[in-house]
Length: 241
View 1 (cartoon, rainbow, N blue to C red):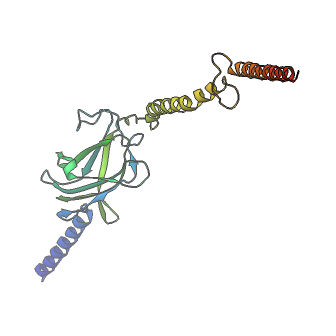
View 2: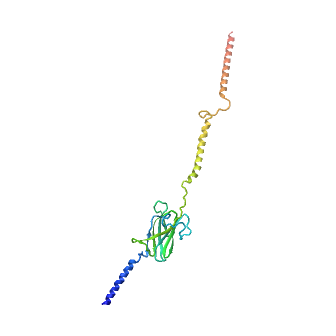
View 3: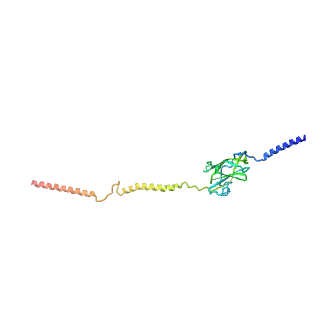
């Protein structure tokens, strides 16, 4: 009787111990894990994730106009593999994701049994959201949802954009001078050349004045006609005598 009671006590103790272990153990995702990115809407420069330019050991040759983003999946072994990754960025500052980087754009590594991946983007982009899929277990659980983290990054300096008005100086010198001479050359000289000729654009006066000669000639003809008439009259008068 006593032995049966001891057996029941051992069974109950074992059940309680298993339940306690299950409660104390961290929550793990299934082997096929699809954690989302925990952070959203992060611009690296000036954020708590920025370690400073060139301080990311994952990218020793960071370009000055690049941002480096490093992500981590808390895993259990070096056997974890990144199957799928989508990182959505806003590249033009309007708050809307317009560029997606995938696992093909990332470099995956393992560090002390933890899966990491890093990507580089042009400096100044904003990380909007991200999704992933890995083989292995993920321990970061918040309210029943599993996540991966942006762990740190190194912000570069955005490249200075080319001024939008730079083509204007090159166009205006070539267009304005070419139009102005053509207009002034076709109208202005014509107007000034007509002024010296005297009202109404007539031909300029050159050589000897013809009007005076004509008047003198007409006067001489009239005088000749008058003399001829006087002479004929005298001849008639002599005939009558």
